[in-house]
Image (cartoon, rainbow, N blue to C red; front, side, top):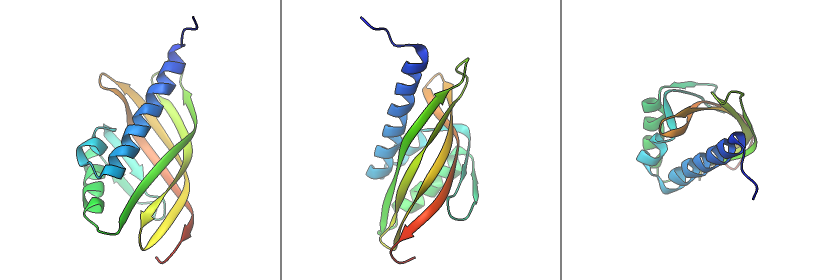
Length: 136
């Protein structure tokens, strides 16, 4: 029997947390989105560079977006996850896509995860928009 290393288990946990966050966005589930964030979350918007500071502020951002009839959502796909040694934080780098019926965007992101008693939570995400399609 092959035993998973703590880092491998943590990477799997982070991938599962990311998948749950993506699913919450797709379902327009505000509570599910909120569950992904550490209290001290900071997000950097991809096109404007605007900082969204705090878990509640990012949750409010999604709550407003979910009410927009043209909102299509966002999907974040991890390419690399690196766990610190000791595992006090982790880095996730990947690509994202999403938007609305008025235009689709895509780009890359970098995220920091931190372990908490409730599992790995997002401390920060920084998105960079690299392309778009459709009306804006």
